[in-house]
Length: 80
Image (cartoon, rainbow, N blue to C red; front, side, top):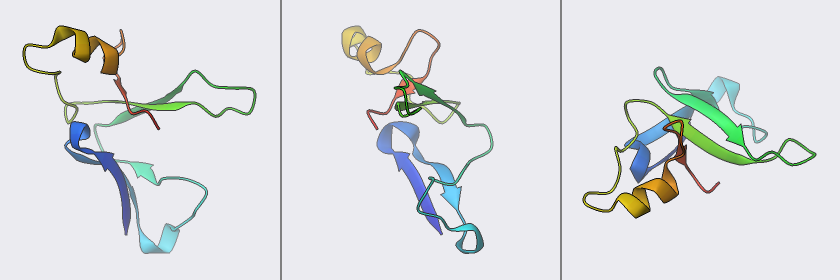
């Protein structure tokens, strides 16, 4: 299996099982995870943003850094 995630998402956000493996996508989102693509270009390519209880709440005592990585709807900006 293959997974996608970051330390800020407490590990995996999507999962691929061997029988559904594809290089065209990152798998299915795990239960409780919400994913959106922000700032799409003309080809639909944009930044992966992730929301759910598994996302960090922010940086301790660093509100500026938190605002930089979490959007106004509470989605984590992955940078991917």
